[in-house]
Image (cartoon, rainbow, N blue to C red; front, side, top):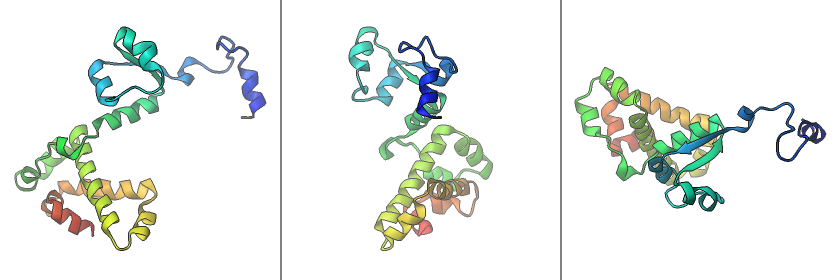
Length: 176
């Protein structure tokens, strides 16, 4: 779309003259409860939202598109390694393939924790390798990196691979 076309669609600064767009094009006003606000923005909210809104009504409301909210929700599931409660011993020894699929691979928090751990193992392997530059170029496309991680995560449901993926040292050797 050319700039002249964009300018012809907006006839006033306050937004009352928008001809071809609806509010769904702009986004939705989303209010985050206090516990989520503190988790998503632990130090400070960006911009002037803190001084203009949050301090007056103790809520955080921002405009965001559906895709932005999905990304925010995905980022909210990320945790630090110390905060992850994945019992790899139980996964390797006690769980059946159907239990792994049902309890781990279908649960968004467990699946995210598993993906994070395997991602860190692959990341560490890349950075410690003598062929670091070659591996960086190979894994640069997100589809390649994410594909390898998802394949390794899905392999947890297979009994022969499970002990190797559950042990940190074996996971590194398997990736290598």
